[in-house]
Image (tube, rainbow, N blue to C red; front, top):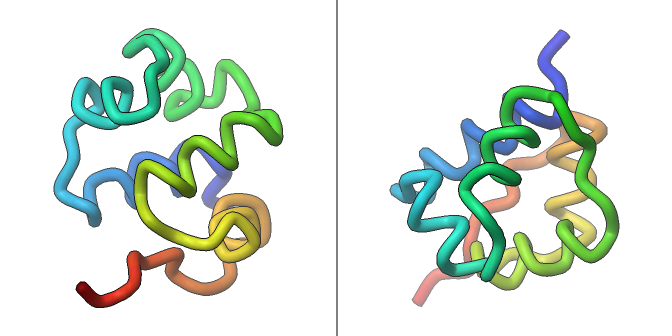
Length: 78
């Protein structure tokens, strides 16, 4: 079973971002992104909201994707 950390990495890559770029967009440390992607920490609600904003996706869709494996959490068309 794929967990939230691996889904986070997959989602970040699908958006064409490095871990460093995502951390900068969110205003968090690269270390935090790494810990989350490697399942050493679990994201809290504040992180989910910041991630949704950074990736331009709806928080609910992001939550469903990360924790339930549903949907794709893709950004809206520009």
